[in-house]
Amino acid sequence: MKLSSRLLAMSLVMFGSTAAVTNVFAQTVSSPQQKIASNRQTFKPGINRVTFQSAGEKLVGNLYLPTNYKTGDKLPTVIVSGSWTTVKEQMAGKYAQKLAERGYAALAFDSRSFGESGGKLRSCESPTVKIQDIKNAISFLQTVDAVDKNRIAGLGICAGAGYMTTVAAEDDRLKSLITVALWLHNPAIVNQVYGGKAKVQQMIQTGRKAAASFAKTGKGDYLLATSKTDKTAVMFGDIDYYQNPQRGAIPQWNNRFAVATWAEWLTFNPMDKADRVKIPTLFIHSEKGAIPAGAKQFFATIPTTNKKIVWMNDYQQFDFYDRPDVMEKTLASIVDRLRSTL
Image 1: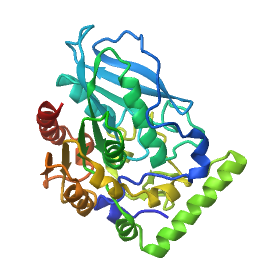
Image 2 (image 1 turned 45 degrees about the vertical axis):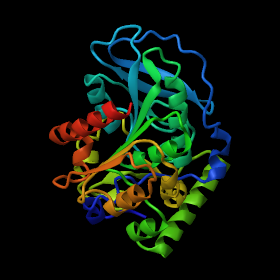
Image 3 (image 1 turned 90 degrees about the vertical axis):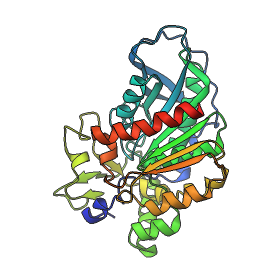
């Protein structure tokens, strides 16, 4: 059930997102474009703590605004979705802050079951839930005076790419799509990454049993997300980003993985949505990153001609999360793209 450090070095774990079975989350499903009342909050330059609803649960986020923001400004805006198991203060917040420094409003938020947000089964990386939360974040942003509601882009990092590409395919309120260090898989890639079809089916069944147990008892089963010593951890080995307090191992992140995660994550197939992505698209990735073949396959299927893929092959997967020089190069491509598409 765990992913080896060798696979990690090949970037095959970074997106290890989740899974509870659909019936566990059925009561939390909301309409794709949840209506949210007009927002009367006063916003200021810098970080603004915000809250909004998604399927009856409170989500907590940080809305970053430029230092020269003044009341009445209507800004192009980016929603940032980070890697699996992560919270808003990790890579999503870093990119959001850097985008605000470049003149954009940018939102990083905790999806249900993570960080400060609500949700019953904690640390559960449900693609269905995360996709709905992004859609409801769009609804929220359309109520914010600082946001130009007709110029909202989505930036998905690592596992967040699968969620953001799905939103781009399903929600026409998103006007531009950007992914960085992306993980996009289909059943064949899942079998390759996770040890073969039989092993994958075993993991799916384990996830379903854990989800059923949670539905019955209200108690979740958990593994460590990462460890150098505990071989049951989902990411076992020396994985600096998630284990270094100066990087991703921050106090807000609990280093936990809901076992129920496996079933939905392993059956999630964002590739099926590629032919429905009609908006301007930018992919930024590396051949040394997570399953570059998945990125190439998805990119080739996107029907729009307004698409671009940038390869930064000097860098590993985790470099894109927080390494300053890599982020600067990545952001240069992102901003160039946003200026031409929003």
